Image 1 (cartoon, rainbow, N blue to C red):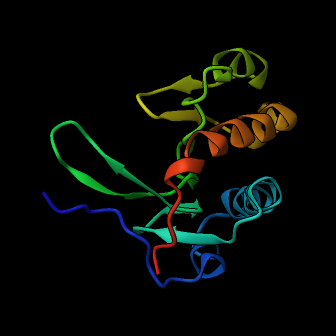
Image 2 (cartoon, helix red, strand yellow; image 1 turned 180 degrees about the horizontal axis):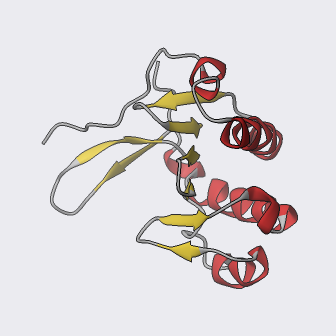
Length: 139
């Protein structure tokens, strides 16, 4: 099985410029937040995910690949966050985040102004620590 979502050479600013005004502004704010918390530079993963850092994973099935240590996607309907639920303390912080829904590995919010950005920063930091042992340089 070939991994579909991988880092690309598309500049993040170029991608953000294709979004509507609100998602562009939220995307720029999120880039600044994720960069400040992780110390990593943003990289486009696939057509719409902005990732920070990289880690290697391998499932029991033998499938392996790389994935961003923290990421978000400013999709039209909702902002999608990746890697924020993996830390054991994340559930308690999610309770402070504000209006959101969750999926298997995603946290969804409708707009950035509706959530607690300090809680978001804490979730990013917690998630970042979970993948520290498997962090890799994809280049």
